[in-house]
Length: 307
Image (cartoon, helix red, strand yellow):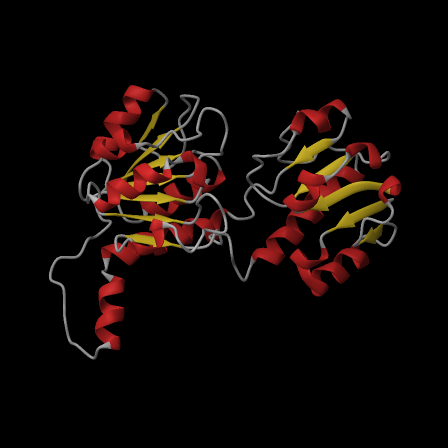
């Protein structure tokens, strides 16, 4: 069996471990043998641009990302190709990134960095705690659940927004209706966008949504840039309708140097690397081992998207 794997993402150490664990599998790191590849373990660039007709033996794609917007799932299903995502691999690091963005504002980090540069002793008396505050998490997937678990440590009230009204551990309330969402936006101290991008979520956050929020609220986006009308968010931040925003995603990416986002003092921005972690390669390796083992045992692989 020939398995293509993105070598760069797991590195030499885990690539060697994979080959030793599965000596009967031929692992390849280039696409010169497309007609022989049965399993494709790859990043978006390859999956989004691939011509399925060139992969006559392909049975399963292990996608090495959690979000799958821009992927033609119908095309794979029509060709009987199983498509699974990297759910849970990035949840912990993204959750920690959310905390970084929150604490950046809550503890006035930018002020103290500037004070240190200028050698000025300048304490700020009023800083924000998480304790007893309210978080609204849009998206109760692996990232949302990891966030809720961590928020609970701070005795926070946690609201989750999702499609189905199912109770979840660590969430105090689950909402599904637009009217409920507006009510939650009005009381939340922290609004975290972790929804996938689709027709329903595209540009769901506009100026009117920001106007509903508390002036002391923080908006964090670790989902997809196009879930937010960027010009509306810029206007809301310029007018200080909310306290600030921490975003890991924008459109387009990379962000052009002339974007107004760069000049906003109440915006903390990172270049779509919230998932970056010293544990990433190990977690991806563990996902591959788990799902490849299930595949070889004729069991259903986990985190299938196009079933």
